[in-house]
Length: 344
Image (cartoon, rainbow, N blue to C red; front, side):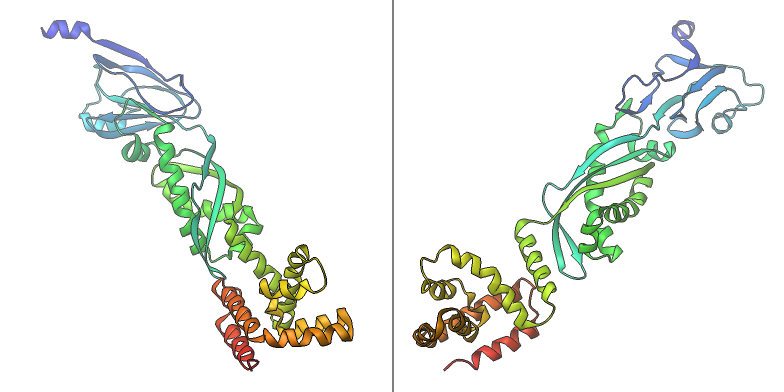
């Protein structure tokens, strides 16, 4: 029986991998009923590694080149098998090949907005998309941590894990960098570098090397973008509250004008839209200048009769701006006190 088993065995003189599939990262050489000839040839092509494993223990690793297998070229395996210098017999070992080519254009993106801490806004929710490239850098680590003893390990088996790492490190990396969101949004290369630096250790822990990462799109949800636009508008007029009120009025007037049929409708639409943010007296002054003395005299009592409602509407508008972070608590309290004094 032992002789029959011996005759069934195939003795391998040449070990190599031609990488038939582009998606394969690791491939286990089929060794069933096979043994490797002492003095056999191992060919490792460019962008490949070969790894010998004996009874679950990682032994020797080979980079690109052609090798004659024996005690001189397999020192760790020789150690594990206790071979003496006169070893000449065929031997059994698991052999794994790894493709170390760059894997380009791997897409990543946020299916839902990701919340990032920001030193200016406190927190922002962003959407981002891009791609990255990686390769196997440490075959021993990749074998022990990722591919294991599987016959074939493909890119698809790893894609979900890598995309998850990118999204996980988005929040951690941006927060640790201390760079304001507006600066990152204005410079996507800077954002990509922050992510690259945050991700590299996680890739290395898997035996991978992150070659590059790009950010192709970075955006805010619509509602947050509106708040940001208001902040930018306020920044254009500085901290002068009077100028800010004028800015708000200027933003509201085009909307009011769309629904006006005559001169008298302007005042009513202003009240209805909360454009009293310019305050009652500012509206009265504008009406006096635009409509003349007679019209102003007629308009003055109307302003007086709705003055309380105007103040309430203005307070609601200012409270909304404070809730969105456009006004500080101190600015809101100061303006609230000023408005309450105007109540009669």
